[in-house]
Image 1 (cartoon, rainbow, N blue to C red):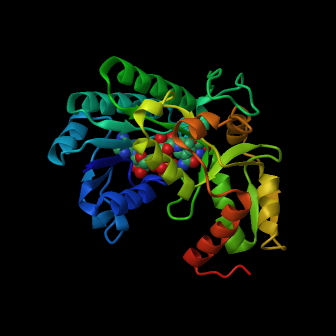
Image 2: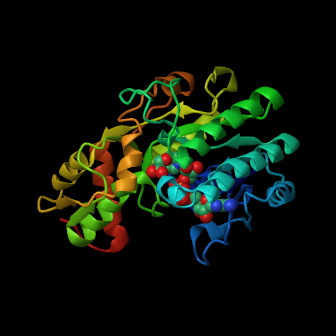
Length: 320
Ligand code: NAD
Ligand code: SER
């Protein structure tokens, strides 16, 4: 029986991963952890939860001991755009926090899942069909923390035998919890604005191609990787995974198929534009497909149709 702790459980991914893991392993076996208690009445409040700060090793250790945790999903981070405003905090959470989790895992023999990102690549990385093993010289603090995390996790596996695993997620698109301040957030915001106002002002320019993935596939990827046969894993902490690649224009045109009067204009945010320009246009995820059977279910048309339906339901605004 697994006993799981999710750190950063109230974020875009954590809020849905916690519910999915509770369905799979039982509510009492999945502890949600974050800086604040879950809001009263929220789904996260329906199971065990703990207030903890990843930058304080003692609090992680105590929660792991109290709940007999054997697996930690470490989702705490400052996303790329916020991290550029608060680089010291980004390093503290992303690297010192990661180190704390690994030390607790080493002492208590926990397995650890940590997402890396398309942000771990940089301007000298091959941009198209970005290989699994390639140049990683990111120019953002977010990317620096992600590459450091990948290396630290590899080190703890090789040196101490800690069962560390991870994915390089692309931009994640979802409708439950809003994204936390990344460069790819526009691909979520566009749906809310389309449903509310039938128009959207895009902060990334035409031609800014980035990898993306629908949340259902992102959750499956994390769980499938953690359940994969370890003997088959060669790239434990840094699997490229993607489901689709588009620029704002392609996404807007897909929305127009459902909402012909939808209009998009541009007011480019120079910080986000500069970050996006250093990330891959599309990644090669064949290592994930070969080593643990990665196979996403949602491509652009299915994701767009589902997002429009779900955001429309959530806001109580019909879009057809
Ligand atoms: P998010 O910003 O939505 O959530 C992060 C959570 O971490 C928040 O609930 C926050 O309160 C918590 N947190 C921050 N500092 C903390 C601390 N000191 N101690 C404990 N908790 C703390 O992020 P997300 O989108 O859910 O991303 C989760 C992980 O996936 C991150 O590592 C992120 O880099 C990675 N990732 C996300 C995306 C994406 O598009 N969402 C893409 C690639 C990688
Ligand atoms: N969605 C994330 C960001 O834009 C990618 O890691 O920061």
